Length: 309
Ligand SMILES: [Zn+2]
Image 1 (cartoon, helix red, strand yellow):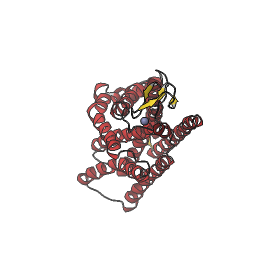
Image 2 (cartoon, rainbow, N blue to C red; image 1 turned 180 degrees about the horizontal axis):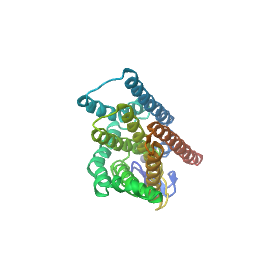
Image 3 (cartoon, rainbow, N blue to C red; image 1 turned 90 degrees about the vertical axis):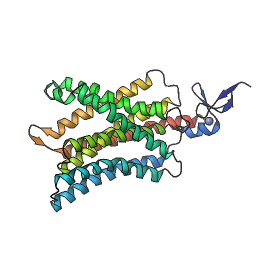
Image 4 (cartoon, protein in one colour; image 1 turned 60 degrees about the vertical axis):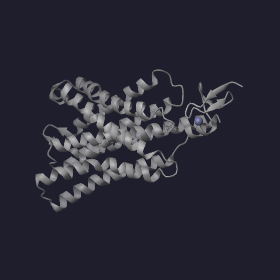
C-alpha cells in the first residue's frame, strides 16, 4: 500500500485514508476538521451582548453620578476601559473552551502578537506614512471609500492575517475549520486594543461616555472583518480552495473593514451634530450579520464533509 501523511499531524496514513480534495487525513483529524463548536458561537453572542452592556453601564454610571474626574485619573481609567473588550472575550471564550480546548497560550499569543504589530507597523503606516486623516475628509466620496479600503483596510487586515497565517496556521493545534475564526478573532481583538489605547491617549482619556462607545465600536469592527478572514483561513487549511481563495478573502475582509470605517464616520458625524450611538448600532448589526453568515457557511462546509464520511 502506498503511504501518505495526515495534513494536520503528519502521521503516516495509507492510501485509503479519508481525503478532502488531494489532502489525506488520519481518522481523528478528519473528524476534527468538521467540528461545529456550538460553544464558540454562543460565546460570540455572549461577548457581543456583554460589550453592549458594558457600554451602557459605563454611560449610565458616568451620566447619573455626573462623575467629575480629573484628567490625571481619566487617562488611566480610559486605558483600563480600552483593555476590557479583549479581556471580556478571552474570559467568555476560555469559559466555553473547556470541552475542546484550544491551547490558551496560543490564542493569547496571537492576540499579543497582533497588538505588537499594530503598534509597530499598522498604526504608524496609516497615520504617518499615508497621513490618512489629514486628506481623507476633503476627498470625493468614492475616493474616501477607496482610501478607507486600501489605506486602512488592507494593512490592518494583512497584519492580522499574517499573524495567524505565519503564527499558528501550520501548527497541528489548528485542526478544525472554526480555528480560523478563533485565531483571527483573537488577532482582531489584539489590534483593536492597541487602536483603542491610542485613541484614549490622543484624547487624554476625555469624555468617558463617548470614549467608551468608540472603544466598543472599534472592537466590534475589527472582530467582524477578522471573523470573515477567519472563515477563509479555516477552509484554506483543510481543503483545496484554489490560489485565489486566500487573496480573495483578504480583499473581502479589507473591503468590509474599509467600508465599515467609512460608513461609521458618515453615520456618527453629520455637519456639526455628533451621534456616536449610531456607530454602536451599526457596528453591532455588522457583527451580527458577519458572524451569522460565517457560522452558516462553516456549518455548510462541515456538513458537506460529514456527508462524505
Ligand atoms: Zn492527523
